[in-house]
Length: 23
Image (cartoon, rainbow, N blue to C red; front, side, top):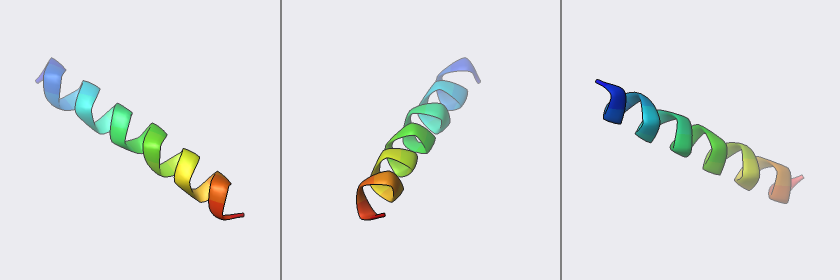
């Protein structure tokens, strides 16, 4: 479960970075 949460958090961070880059 911890790993899944960590993966989800990392993906969320990557998504946020991608969105910021797109703006």
